[in-house]
View 1 (cartoon, rainbow, N blue to C red):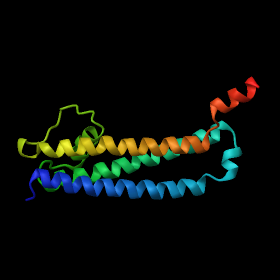
View 2 (view 1 turned 180 degrees about the vertical axis):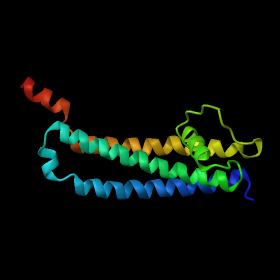
View 3 (view 1 turned 120 degrees about the vertical axis):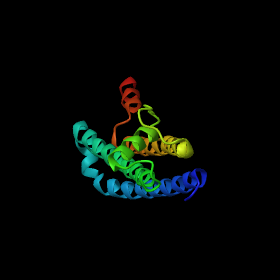
View 4 (view 1 turned 90 degrees about the vertical axis):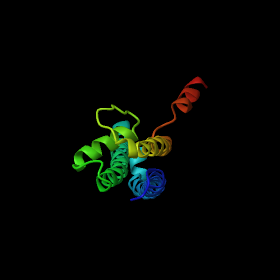
Length: 148
């Protein structure tokens, strides 16, 4: 069995790579969907586009949490995938209810998942911000135009 530190490092590297590759492909897909026609549509259509993008990024985070959950089951920390996934999502979001915990031997894994989860949420936030900049009108620009 792999020791917790090594397992945490390897799983972190794997899930970060999957997340970054997912963000790149998601960006390409959204770039295709973000046609010039979308940018000329009303604000409601653009908000709907951004909402779909956020949902897809949430799914990407769930995929990463799923890999951690599978690992938790594989090492015998959980018998039921649903409990492992719940623990994984709570850990990755750094919510950390504490209602379910890992055994003392494997606690270090949760630290790796929490740290990588925070960083990956930051990457997703940056991607959403970029989409918002490209999709939504600049509120300062319209104020500057009206001031002239």
